[in-house]
Amino acid sequence: MTRRLRPLLCALLAWPAATWATVGVAASDSGAEVSICYNYGCASEARVRVHAAALRRIGARLAAARSAAQEREYLAEAVGGLYRVAATQTAVATDRAGNLLDEGADGRMDCIDHSITTTRLLQLLEARGALRFHRVVEPARRTRLILQHFSAVIEVLSVAERIDRLPPGEALAGCNCTEDGLVIGAAGEGDGDDRPGQRYVVDSWFVDNGEPAVVLPLAEWLNGGGPNVQ
Image (cartoon, rainbow, N blue to C red):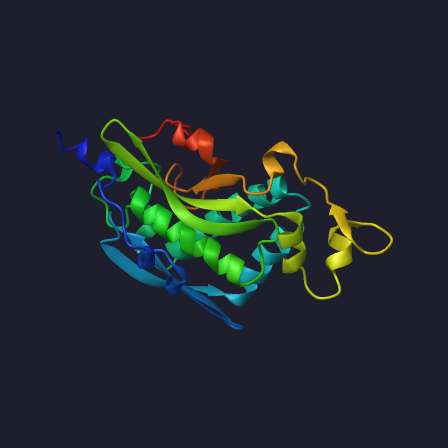
């Protein structure tokens, strides 16, 4: 195996759930802290402070989403923005798309670093009520020949679950209801990309630090979908 091929393996291993679970996130009214991974295989970790003003801007942007598809678009931008914040406080500013462009640099991130960190960033937003159309689930793994690749994953919520996430008093504004108040459906329910239970990867490994993450249907990603980077 050549030295240049070795990073592409993206570590032939999985990791315990505790490494990506919400224990990596701490939030308060004054902002939040999240632990990020870098230098391949989460060899290095650092706490990043996200100020309340930045979280409010991201929250306002996500609140403007009117469909699950639109929320995914805004979420890709939000993840990129949070990585830019991390780049001002840690070495990850050097991270480039894939593995080869930043090989050997302090702050480089492989797919394990990205899948763990992006999951934590998504959980931070979810914990603050910023996700109305999706939930954060466990990272996914795909295997092609001997190579493995990992990514953060989100899942589309049902109408009932979306309404449960609305603030008190706003539930009726988020659904189509009969005169007696029973929910009979909502925009996007059952429509292809917005089908409840549909899963999408949020893959920041494909892009340079701070760029919007790549969001793809999980099935497409598992079949090798995504930009051609190494």
